[in-house]
Image (tube, rainbow, N blue to C red; front, top):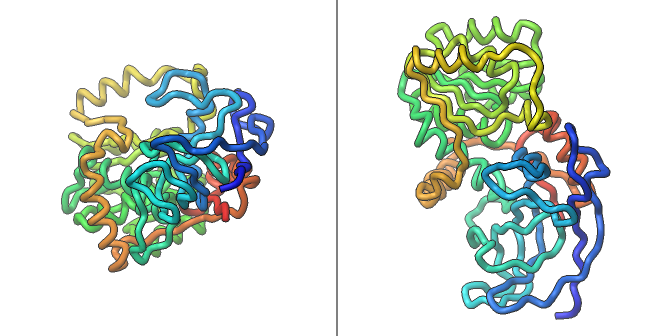
Length: 340
């Protein structure tokens, strides 16, 4: 195969607060010939996810930051163009850590799994049938553990994690309250079966939430933080479980001391008094559940018990602006960049 030139987006500088266009750089670069154990891939779809904001910072986290001038991290659906590994052949489709670029040379261990024709759109392996869907599945299974008759509340409920959380919890017999931003998203939650759907932008949001949970909250699946968390905390029942998946409201203020009184001592006291379970998690913590997730979610998608929505953007050059919108809640469904 002749020389391959990849178009890529690299981290040009670290943001202070909200990321800006000049934190990224679009460039072209030649790729080396794949060596032993490596694959040359063409990325077809790129997933954009909130966790990427943390990778732009240099601070300590659960994964190493992206280095300056390195390609931005991201999962991709990719086609193998050339293989130097016996387990992969040219023409196969894979889910991989391909990054924000059109082509890449990767180690075979960067492949998450092979993709087969299962009747589902390829892009779903980046959303409801991939990491976001598995995050919902694992967080509920291991931490939330909703029981029939309990009340579950989930923030960012129109996104790929939140929407999946609500639908799985309903299948388990829980009463579900979804929170999203804007009337269109609120109506969407109703259409996929949430018992109550609320718009956090409403002036009386806290009062609406209180009225929606007359028996209190048993499970709160945390994706947002900020004022939504503030409204939830007084409504938690004894022994409530809080899987902490994300706090997107605070992502741009990491490392800063936020204004206002220190409410942590009071919340810690509430955790003790009400015997709350509050646990942060990363989906890979529960990777042993992934094979069962693929089986369960595949069946649920095919028989219509799980609905999903995607927000697909065309072209790699659109990725930074789409990412900015993701951090502000402008996307509607799983955000995917189509690279074909």
